[in-house]
Length: 451
Image (cartoon, rainbow, N blue to C red):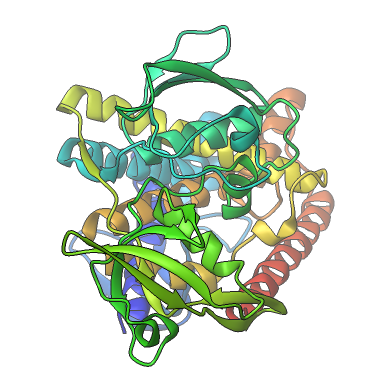
């Protein structure tokens, strides 16, 4: 129920904001709006406001919306209302009306990002865990427990790193741009002073900000001490005598530096061998024998002990004063928009996988998960989807807002509108493109749900 409610609220809000952008600017430009609809199909609810000619509707299918304006191309218009018809408006007004929908989504995202920055978010500190074996981070010499205090493109000014999420965002951008990053690291107290490391992402092949990207870079999770949490009954951990609060010091004589290293070691334990664990409990050391159980995970074997591994990461409050928060909202919206466009572009030329396309099932899943994490997480989810909706609608695909803006660009250059015959062909092509993209996205959704 949480997933369904979170999904419906998200879709309803984002669609309403998008369509309200069209509606508000159309009214400001003197266009008569006949219907404002959230959803398609049979109307579930309809009403009118006093002294307002617009019919407001909530449709049965909540996967979109529309604003129907008075237009001679769609129906006969009374001569007394010709000046209110959309097709009779000057080019600049038609452009403004069409562009207002995506712009409203960007403004909503900027407002959400600004609000979150002003309220403040508890985020993990930028303390590194053990790099993934064979990754760029391991090759560069990054070590567990080091704090990243500054970052920047090599040869340019460095900027402070406020949190682990901030670090991941910089890494994603650098991977997209294939840049060489300089990291200023503060090692643990017993490992010397501040040092600089270059992380070379110039030859990086992956271009999407997903889990595999960060695994390839080698920076996956923030530092967390290898302390055990909840122990599931009858699991390998419980049978070995492990308890919540145990600090794992060594496994088969090898020192365990952090929870990421311990988790990876457990996953790789697929030979059924009994391991010798040294743990610290109540100030004393204990030796226990642990035998991870082997499970099949999508065709690959994986070891598990049926216990939560790792204590919560250290947190830091990241917040801005109001002017900086407003600027943060604008810059974050711009950055996410560019990242979305680059990813779409790389999918188009084959440099990124089409598996990155997500449909309504994945969006619903993320809506439920983010809502379960709290208001801030849900707000950030809404901002991300709002940016995606704005970018998608600005693509130069006929039938989308960007397609209409493409027609108006042609009209502005040539002085004449696109002919009805060409309009019909382009609209058909646009529908075919959208149906193809929707089919791929839905297929990806189903495959994710099936594991």
